[in-house]
Image 1 (cartoon, rainbow, N blue to C red):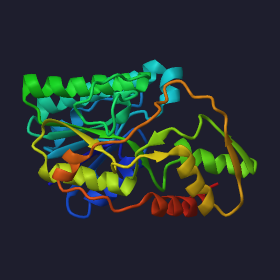
Image 2: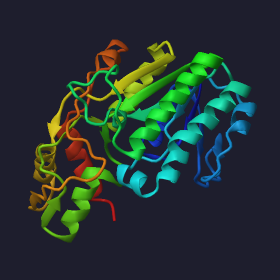
Image 3: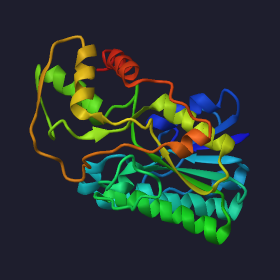
Image 4: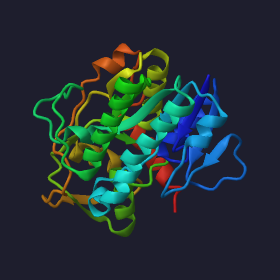
Length: 297
């Protein structure tokens, strides 16, 4: 099988490359300069053109791991977020439509499309009410996938990722906990600590993607990618600092950030039906992450 990973230098993309190249032919695409990696294509960070990639090779599957992944940044720079998370999805699908119409397309979407769900666990059929530019742009990207499936019969699938984490992630909650603890042994955090997230380790994300590649029908599927467990932020912070090599005192400011939802827990019935089973507990994942951050500057 020939698989193209777009965003191959990013957090999830790197894990996808390492996983799929064990059994398949893998091509890579990103904005980073790389003169040594075989079967790698660099695209322009501000005006990506994907045509040549699909003209030169007939892929069986394209996994789009590219795009921005920051709610605060999407509020500060909405045009950039729109271009990376929405416009580029259209460009990729248009290139597939013109040059490689049999290629199956997986788009990594986000739980941010739900906003603040009215019921938990949240199912894929839940009303979408995103509360950030990031969430709105991810929803638009899903609509584009629907368009190309309905009108052009392109095989598409959207994976709504919840809170992915793991070694190699230089941002978001756990990285912030590490950086703040390096500066001060008393750490202040946003929110109340009662907010809940459904965390999934990046290795399990890739296993979920593999299940989709093998077993989904690509009729514009919408699939939650999570572990189906809600953890309060205060609990995962406790687990993180329990594994941390120094004692840290932390408190919550009670101030929420714009665009942050309150409670997330995914219904993962569809993913389980495709053969997915979690392999990494939050405790194991955080211990591994703490060991990894100790080696980072």
